[in-house]
View 1 (cartoon, rainbow, N blue to C red):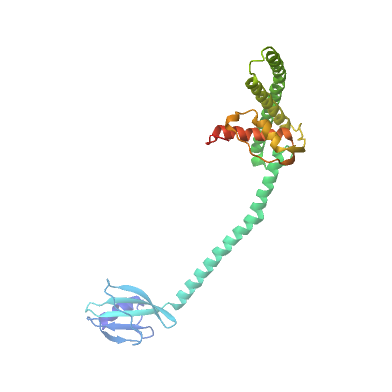
View 2 (spheres, helix red, strand yellow):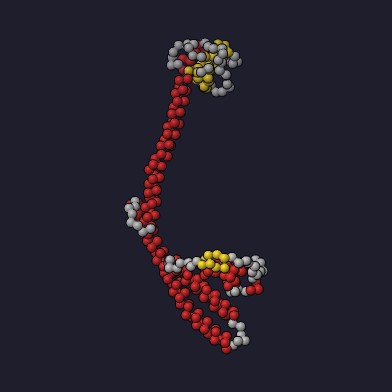
Length: 284
């Protein structure tokens, strides 16, 4: 018995053996010789001695140490750690609650400060790009200046291309007028020659130049659409005269709408041209 009690004395820092805590004494075959409570017998596991494990009995939790004496007897001794387990449970709950509170606090500060700052920053950048002088953050001032400069360059290039397109469209008017005049003279002198294809090509060039000029004016806000009552069937027929008739079959009822006839014909022209170029069928 003395050999069996030695581990217990070491475990309890030299105190005498007592029965205030649960214990179990087993013989070398593992059978129970003595126990503080026969209703609470911890299992004996085939493991390297000594070993410890936590076991619950009722509302309490015990930490059992199992050791083997020099004579082969087994001693299982338990210490009540219920308060410690309860403390660790409360600590775990407190830590989890603290983390949740911290995350909620971060979200609150994000919406309260960061989100508001980003909204103010977005408004400042937008107003700056529109040309208005506003106070911006010092950190983004170089970016805003660079964007303003780039926007100014793009506007200048756009104005340059628009002016160039308008100049080219205007410069085509005089040559086209001369070509029409010469075509009329040739047609009078050589009535047996068919100049209809040449006339159609000249009409196509004139129409394209007018379209470019109109688009340039629209971009410069110098052209306002003129709405009037139009027959879409008649407008489409005028457009189809510029295309090979052997591939076109028209079956359309009259449709009366308020629109700009020139713009409507340009839309029809683009649609018909794309259909002829990319259509899979033989007829349109």
